[in-house]
Length: 126
Image (cartoon, rainbow, N blue to C red; front, top):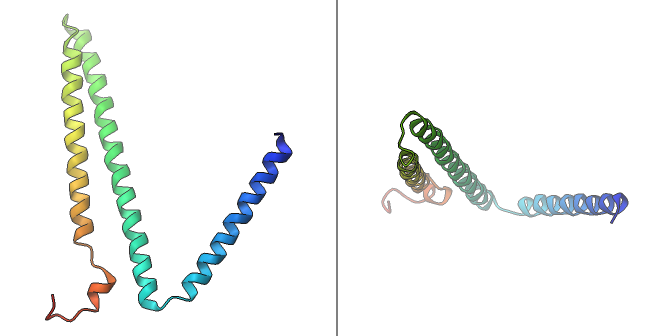
């Protein structure tokens, strides 16, 4: 497969994406406003969840890197090299707990998010 084949594949993928976008626009045009609001809500929830999970992973990775560097510093300043592993284990536990805390906060945030189908419900049912 040379450059020409790769270019042809990229062109076919671009065409498929264009057709998919056109079909999505047509599908959304056929929706009622209530269905469109529900679909938008689902997409928003997915975006918020993915963003929150990404932030949680990044924060956990930052904590692990910080623990690794702190472990190296502690091990180099003392004559006890095994302290590196203790510091790294502490950083791993801290990273895990920080990630879990963010995921739990995200779950609660998503649970309390208003939904379009609940807004139409009378106050007596709530």
